[in-house]
View 1 (cartoon, rainbow, N blue to C red):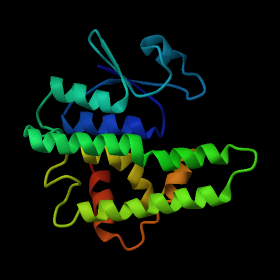
View 2: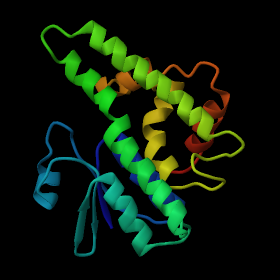
View 3: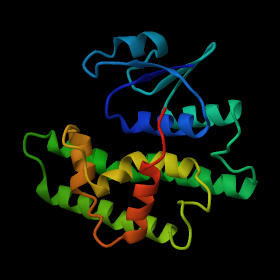
View 4: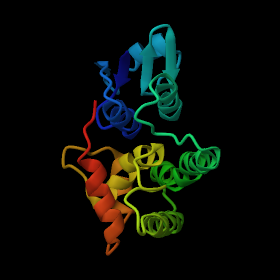
Length: 203
């Protein structure tokens, strides 16, 4: 398997966590974010991660997680029980399609000639408020959807980890937004979860 990645990519980190959890190794191709030609040539689109597995080329981090689960089901990141699997599907769709909305909107607003400060404040409050939902999910359990690591944790961690701070070398605007608009505060369960997932290996 070959994984196309870029430095500091949150979506690449999802896949790196999943690969290591499943004990899988890959050949890595690290691209220059300013030159996405290698990714476009192999996948027809510019975004990472892209996984090449034999004759298959899979783009999009969630699609890669599902591909890895299908090809290498143990240890599992997706539950076998249909009810629990449906809950995980709902979480992943909400996180990817709804949760990501406000930080992406803040980034777009900051790119305007005159950013709307009031809209940024509103979006920031929404991001901060969602941290309470994650704190509640972690009551009396170690992981977001149960007592075992799942794709929910792998998908959310690379974004939520910025509530606990950002490495000085990581100066991407989107990551600064995740850092500045997610006040961890006294959310002790979320802080412990971030530390717990952060100790896991990456491929």
